[in-house]
Amino acid sequence: MRYKPAPLLALWVMVLSGCGSDREGQLIVDHQRAVYESLALQDQLQQQGGGHAAADLGIGISNRGMGKLLLLLKGLVISPTQPPKGYEDLSVRIEDIQLVSRAGRSELELEFSLSSPANSLQFAATMTGDLLFLPPELDTDTPEDQLAFRMKVRELHPRLSWYSLPLQSISTMRDYLRYRLIEQVEKSLVMKVPTAKLDKLVLGLSGSEVMKDEEKGFQIKIAYASPKFEMPLVARYSQFLMTDSGFWIFARYGDKAPSIPKPVARVPKEQLESEIGRLTYALRAAAAGLNFWSGDSAIIVRKPLLEKLIVQFNERSSDERTVSFQSTRSRGKLYEKQWRDNLLGDGGLSVELDSRDAAWGTVVLKQVSSTWSEKGLAYSASIDVEANTILYVHFDPLIGGGVGKRATLEGTASPVLAGTLSFAIRTYAGVPVLVAMNHLDCSKFPLTVLDDGDLSVGVTVSQLIGGGKPTLIPALMG
Image: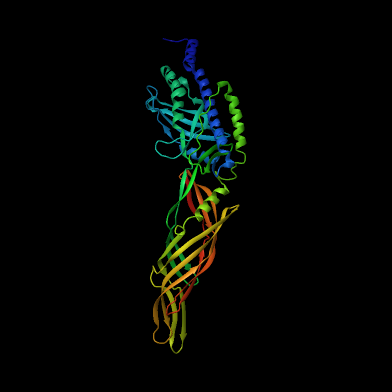
């Protein structure tokens, strides 16, 4: 049977159009409603939390940084849960993803390919929409607070020649693209991000250092440790903002539960556009002052938060602020002096550790004071050092072959330490991590140990502390 050109064209138009206009119209309305809900939730959190100026801690990821995270989705293959009949081998692969943040929302564009080898079918499509914000929710697998972002599709443009499909398959593929594909992409592209949930800080030191004196030529390896203790710190997610330059998450000290916004009031379809405009303006005003001067991330730490932590630390017992140390290895002489007499020969005096574990003691960190600087929190603290050691002293006076003696010595010192505590964001395996950076200023202090026994012996060690690379302390994992 042969169709005439006009009836055949009409048949194609009927099959391709179907109820497409109704579906596309509903897609636009659903998208607008989702955008409105996301904007309203952010505005509500701003109202509850007093704006970002009221938060103690803020972590921001720029558009460029968020784009790098989203690129992790590149190459993701989505297997349809309900593929079209006859296209059971159909697969959807994300080829590229682009994001541009705006006040309250982020425009998202997905390039993906669809293929069905059994039907010799392969074509590309572009899906546009927005990455929208959902309120925190309790994940079923973890007890952490969550932020969720989902894609809400606005438009879908398949680059497909419908004439390449059998007539009976056109309606099937059209319905799949307009209904099930969009629904599955929206369900699959949900990003859940753990927010700042702090109940306590666990503090404590352990490690080793090498004390050395290049001039005298000795080295002593010291292992140190302090008791671990918990310092209460309750901070919860309070606000979230999408801005023209990126994403911001805020936490407030003292909040015992995350700020969860109430359900958004539903507005008539005719008011959606005007409400979106009003809320966009309000959120852009709320984000004033939030900028990314350089890099992919930024952080805000309010001065009162760090001051509260220092007050808590100063209130801890002296036992919790005490570091014990023990030598584990030694090499060289602490002191050595040689002399020679043409008649009597060689003689000298040498002092060294009696054994590798012959030095031990404690360091007590006393009151810490702080001031705010451009580099972060500048602090200073006095410490009390008590040292004990067993030395082996050999003295050769040129007469009688010399004498050796073991002596137990004790000594104290009270130097002042100074440094700067700052925060930064590092990326590990594509995940942003907040770290505290402790940079201890380089200083030198003398430590003298003396023997109060029959043999009068004393040794003074001038030890450098601080300097070098800053210590990284993981603070918040995201």
